[in-house]
Image (cartoon, helix red, strand yellow):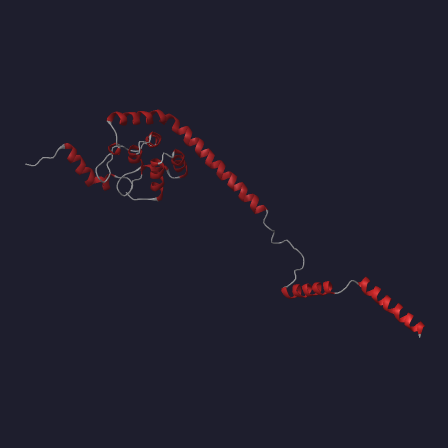
Length: 209
């Protein structure tokens, strides 16, 4: 008779039944990628932004390997992320594709694991206020963007505005040629002066004759 140890039996059952027990499909996604990056880089502001700008179910989603935000919080020893995910009641009792629970990815001693959890518990009471403040800030940014858009739209030219008759290309060419000719022609005063000088010279020659 072959028997299995309880831990091995639990592992086998977890691997066999995870598609049935999981409420969400295990699949990679841009949101999970952003979440992993934020947790691994200890970027709590990005996590708050994701939490207030997305469907909050994203914290329960799982990647293709069966891991999700809670696994990464333990793996990267991130107490703020752990507090946020605990606030959203992300399960810690579900296993990934390899049969590992979230806490199993913690690379430290039992004492260090206890310290991480205690740190997260201390941060949890402040999570709702942080989410509220971040949501208000996001709404303010959206409002300012909308106002700037309205201001820009106000400066658009009214299609009904009449700027007067417009010259076509041929008329513009003629005007440019006339302007160039005017530049080449001497001023009228100079022409009159020259004519007067010529008349005076002609009169003088006539007198001499």
